[in-house]
Length: 113
Length: 115
Image: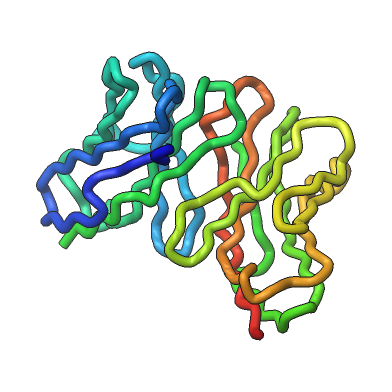
């Protein structure tokens, strides 16, 4: 079975640009969460989506947005990129939003120059 | 606000040595506690979890963790480490009120095991 897949694996952008990151959950998983992991730190929660609805949001500015599609895949969008947005962006899926075990993808490494 | 603190950033051990990684959290209510592991070149995966009941929980690959409510701690232990345990270990917590997808992670502990 395929795990959580994320694309692209690496991305280089310049300040002020916007970026879209994509995530396909494990088949049958309806909940998707996004995390940001800055080098040397643990992942930080950004969003959780379930059935196309936002179920939770972390302490991130409005430049960050996300959505979930009918097939449960998800996109994370970041506008007006800053140098500090450089990080590994992780997607995690679970069958339901209340499920405690998350399955993580390998992430998208975003570098903002 | 919830927070998680891991005491050690980098731990170096020889094979067969015993391991204990510290984790403390701050949250006054019911919590669920986790240890995740990231092996080199791999994605994060669940090592073990505590929801309720026996405060000593056992996970994969011989790892165990003990929840001590009075100390707000959830330390990870293994009696005898192997070279293959080299990885980064993350302690995480969420509020026990259906916040399954929203984990608060510690900063991680990198474990290096020398053969």
